[in-house]
Length: 295
Image 1: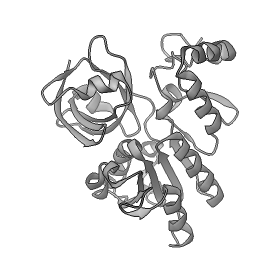
Image 2: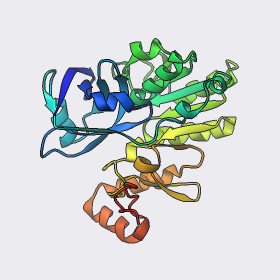
Image 3: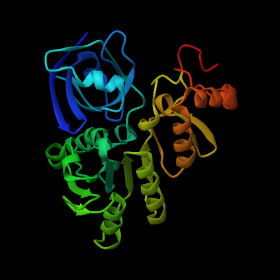
Image 4: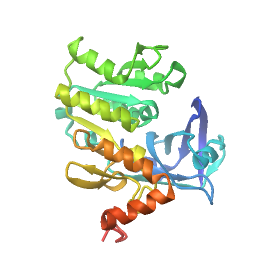
């Protein structure tokens, strides 16, 4: 059992929890995720790590209510306990494997959409703690749906956009990025984009046009989190990959977003899952890499 040290609402249907999980906090890095189960009979939910405090032994998660499992998790309050909190899982951000002196030579921009702000924050914070201040573009439909503004603003050069123009710059995140480069003379060596798949698709189309290498997180397609369900199967270049065991980060210019979105829609129904299992055969499962399920 894992104690909830703090629970609060960030926006409508979006909430944050600081969870006491010292073993996870001790070894996790930006870009990784945990699998959470709120109750003994609850579903397993993969959630990207939003922040961590090694001294306090806590890990921060941000959850959006999209189904029964996330709703049940949202009903837990400060002082309550989560049944399971497993991690860290997935590969850390490639930023953490790059020499700091090399990173200091790069101009980095993050593009976050909606809940994607949560996994962007620990990466921007990690860079800031190593003497690098990146530009961060946060996009939301309205002002009320902007999350982690204060936290992100303290570790980055923050630009906020809203679809309805109610706060910050008006328009999509791609409009802001294009303006920064073409009108304000910004140069970027790397873009990291996290958010809804449709947003990441259009960010990648723009950055390819602008000649900016781009990394995306395919966390949105993860279901089981171990590669055994086949839910996060995607095509990257000419290869089949699984977001949970091979990622969740990939070269955005190689990800087939149209295929990933079509497949995600099919996976929502039992009939669709059965069809995909038959069609994809041995490549349907990624395997956890440890139990032999991928052999």
